[in-house]
Length: 111
Length: 118
Image 1 (cartoon, chains in turn yellow, purple):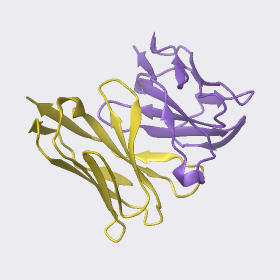
Image 2: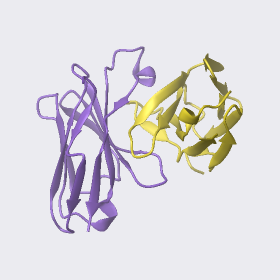
Image 3: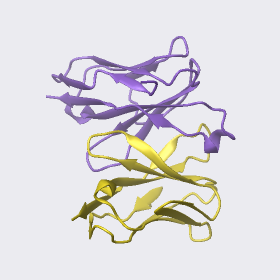
């Protein structure tokens, strides 16, 4: 089993739609989680951090279920500018904060 | 621009040649990371520096790869005798190491160096 697994995508949605991405992780000791956004041929940028059961920032909501080792990202009222790849990220619990990335889920928002 | 910078942005080389990439982290960030990303995959951890000390290396980092951070500021990643399988985006990230402990320390990524080995 991969350490971090994500929905393969791509997700093609119209503007205004609500879309959810799922992510599962294998290390039950992980304490914090991140969603990074990566535009085509650009570097990953931090979108949200999740330390407790969830986090909300405007149109974006991240939820964490530790029992199921499952993280989700919900995007409401999708914008064209939300088109990107969304990377689920789990810090390695063994120390030094190296990040373990999922393969990413690609989102394409169309008019 | 006070973000992480990387040079060169693109590198095309022939198989067997040596290449060196440079990363300048955000000023005063004491933690520096190298990752590698291939098409359709997320970044994979290569190595980590705390100041000038290289504290962790992935098994992905073969003997042909070496990284340094001699004065605890910029870092270089060298690949010797490049192979076609080395073609990837090489990303550098830095973090301050001061925000709530190691598992909450935000990493900021540079724009990457895209390596193509012919």
